[in-house]
Image (tube, rainbow, N blue to C red; front, side, top):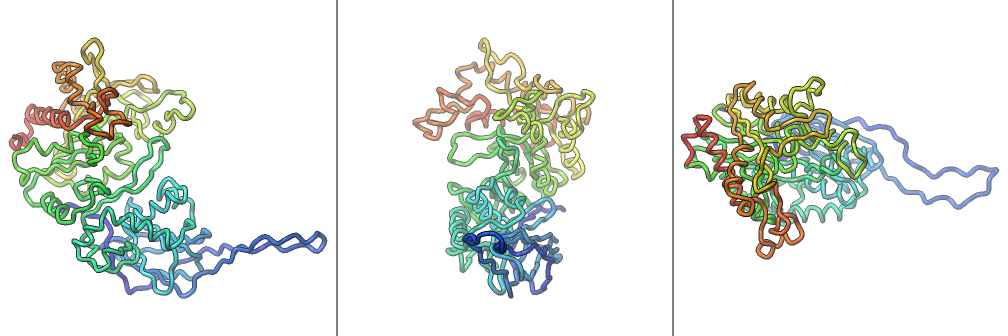
Length: 514
């Protein structure tokens, strides 16, 4: 039976030594003065001291080969492949500190910064080192680790600066490190630590880079527990709780309900309370959590396409097993196809078309990678391959009342090359592939039309800013409602509509509903 996969890094030290190949870029020197010209004041010479007698060693990923590339401050590099256990050792002589270590494990990338290596240096590369490297990237004017890596050289950073970023990591995982009984919990450095207990912490951590929709690139690193709840200062990692959830999700005989979707379904941190996605509290619809576990992978701002390119799709593909369900609800961000010809910046037309949007329908000329239907069929494919049940879900209606009703779907787009109806494309895709459909677009329109425009404010994100101060300056107050997203009451109601759809589709999962 396939276990709930854990593909993140653990720490150890390898005894094997593998020397990489460095590029032979010249060391910068001051230009010589000519005899015929007046001698000008020589520019300041920056002293460059290549490393000597330095060996980096550590581990990237448990029992998995990875490619490691070490970049120095001048753009020189050395590369190697780890052994089958993820261990590596590299002679860093000739490189110039600081160093940036980049590990590629399948489609996942981890970065670590070593500011002042000396002698035998432990240099692990994992999700925690990537979080610290992300903070360094922001301080050095990059949008995140990806941009820093693309620069091709290590950032100018001091050991003290890296130490300060390690301290910021403490707020997220410091308590968990103490639970794991790490001797160095209070002074934890994820790159240099040799404490075996960190393995237990890394086993319950997932890692990804956030998407900057205004730029069309990946940004800062985020850390999640094994059930996709983001680890933050307000919600630090509780190791015992995370391990219990992980065990419950992986238990034999448990049916897992994976949710792939956008911000209308995703999890939210406590700072934006009472905002909830329906997937966040969908577990309330089931009788027994020992028999059904909801794994909410939905991510804010994602389309069916960007959810794939950013790696969330692959996480589900690695974890889903026979007997599970995969609920797929996209549309809100697939619709962001911009106008054509594209408007100039700051309009996002070009960025959204390049990274986010898909086109509805089956019109001739839609590129395969831009087809909403073909994108949805990829989700159907991974579920069927695993022996799981795919369920397509149309997107939640927007709160768009005109004449006291929401008259029609709010999920059409008519400004791009291929205008059409996204909810209808989902219906057609479900029919063409003979998979279950839950029409939340139609159900939520009927639900809120029956309720009425004013009463619907109690379900969408339209709250009292005195009670919830976050919404004094942010959309979601009673006077400035968010007509797309839900507060807790609305999320529970939409979860109820999904449950109703499960029953109507006569899925075996219906037997587990309350």
